[in-house]
Length: 509
Ligand SMILES: [Fe+2]
Ligand SMILES: [Fe+2]
Image (tube, rainbow, N blue to C red):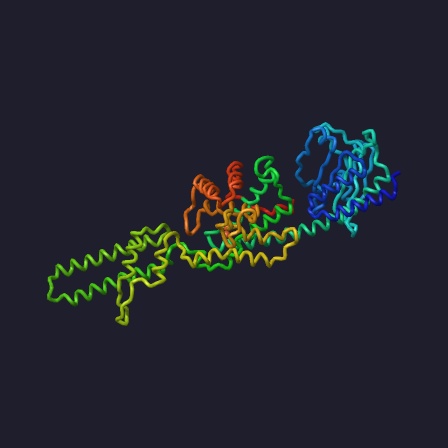
């Protein structure tokens, strides 16, 4: 018989520990570990009852783990909820099972033990205790199953009635803890889905950004996980906790949310001038040429007609060449000095308007846009485009994140900051720039380079994108350690398809 006072203290400690663990998978592992330790049992499992199914969630066997030197990987899977299995029987009847040798269970109505697992791994399940986990309303939400109680000399013994009673008590506490953790998990999953779908909807406003946030989130998480797994090198000492990974996930999914407040004309701009505006200029150009021809004809009554027609032809050819020039100029690319001079000439031509007044052929707005040196955006439009980061910060700052996610706004708004301080909006650099923001920056640049449909540039092939990333790292703008990790671990594999699921998405079977 155990010391009752010590037992109560230990039960209390377990109760506190269980309620402090909100991650469902960790909590269920903890329940089995505590129950095993309390009952001195070698093996233990946990099953939950979910929507009429029995889900095998946790399996621990200390002696096998010791023998193999590692914890075997285990993935939850569903089983039929039937009286033929021990866990199913306990879940359906609410009756605990406590037997000296589980191989003796052979009643036609009751459960039988499938010995194939034991045979496969070279184990002998003998004494067994399985108890239901009932929530505060008495509803059975799962089963704890313990196998092979051990005495101090390492011999298999039976589970005593005292132990059974204590494990039942732990099972009740565990049931309440699981219910609470499920509630928290459901709320988190709900919010994560909302964030994901909002970001996706904003991205899909434009074919130029569709899928960008998802891909950046996927790449960021792959980078963070690779950092966690790096046993050597610059990240050997860096380990992101579960909460930090969750924080990065939210920051990645929210990093461009501020684009919702960026003018669509800027977001969607895919030429120096809107094509309608260019057509307007071309019509004006042709109309002006015709007008000039008519006036020339009126003035030419006493002149040689061949000369007049020749001049008119030249006028028309010039018009056609200028139309061709402006149409080409309007697509993205670099504006050479020569092209700029030609554009200036066209802009400075005088045109007679309806009031017989004269004005330059291109107005200020048209000239300003057509004379953009590189890409499609004017300075003002770049300012508008870049303002999305500040808008991201103000939107994300208004989300009441819990304490462990408090850095989401800082990381999300830091995705255009550069290590050398040349980024925006704050120009923060070096140690001030958190690792998480550097990860987002690398993921963001890689996706912007390889994206197929940005308005201001074409997709750059993978190899070229990698060398641009390396150049940016050499210049001190991107974190070279992260760029090298992306390359050495080939984290770009599967980049386009990564769904960037919430790391603690509730599994539905
Ligand atoms: Fe951005
Ligand atoms: Fe982005």
